Image (cartoon, rainbow, N blue to C red; front, side, top):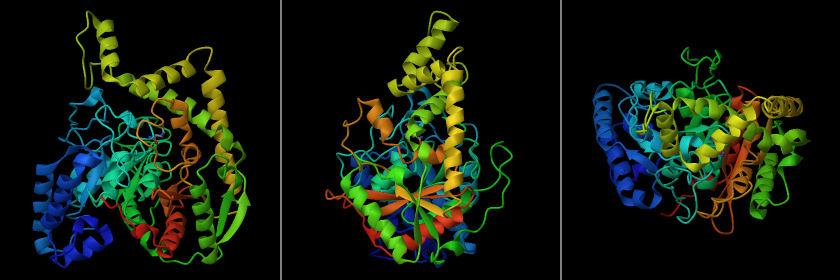
Length: 487
Ligand code: GLN
């Protein structure tokens, strides 16, 4: 087939082209790799481009497709955030600590993609150990926003979102601890979904804050998010926090009307200081949902003002414990050192970047004797209150609509020296992780500077179906998702 840039197409369209043998998996991969060659120097979405592995995978997919129709992902080029273990393929977490770490095993999510015959385009850049909102904390380089190369793509899954927005892959996986799928999706004008805690296995995801981390899809449209979620969701005995629930087929919910659906509008999420274009676009999006028959209801999430503080106590506490394993003995970087203690100290001083060190110190302090009750325990108590806020709100509505981020993509360097400013950019996404509920971000407009704006739709636990149903109805009645960065 000629004349079609297959790298710009979503999964749903490529599946048909591949199954009808109008294109081969190798054709699609060639398009994607040509695109990587053309724009990656500017976008810097990847830490590792797996060129040869991808070609071998595409050839294998073509062999399958020669004799039968593919599974959903057979032959589809997908990028994976570099904090998910891929057997034999370097997995760095964008940290000097793991710069040469080659996992001896496969994460459950990538194993599922492998079983489907996907093609791994490469491992994408992130803030070191997923700690950040801009990829500026990467130990290697900062990724760029395809809509404006002077701006950040968001984070921590900024590489994945930028790769999808720049057509350097068809879709990607990200991870979300406090907003790391949704915020970069919003800033890059693509779709990102954080599933309910426990829906997707975390086995092989390098741990940041284990009670909050979830893996999810970053895609060009809502349909692809639903398809990819169906591929990675489900109980996994290798992850004790994965929940044995039946995962519904999400496809039938796409196209179901949303007439009568109650959309909660939390007053705490429309705040002073939010970018005016975001306020306006999200309000317009709510009107649009209303015109489709949804009923807006005002709800309150009264403990929202404590969410950032609570998150930065709990997430750093868990991180300080999880990152204890990087001691120069078991994984990754090892410094010389005069004796054992000195070796530990040198290894951790050299291997971790400044933000990771800051968080380890904050978390260690919050957990230490004498402070535990005042910080960690208190944080857990407030987390429960935040969770109860959502439970109460969901007695009055089916989904909740909010902005994804208070600001659009910001300039590189703008918030890098002010951690508090950076932490505040997660204000609308963090509570969702603390409560464990699912949420999607999808494009709902542009600022006057032509930067994408994201609408966040939050659902009840394990009710991804209604989240996707609402998102799809909005997407199909607007044209925001059809705009592409003119890179
Ligand atoms: N930006 C938040 C943080 O820095 C969230 C990161 C994430 O979700 N991984 O912790």
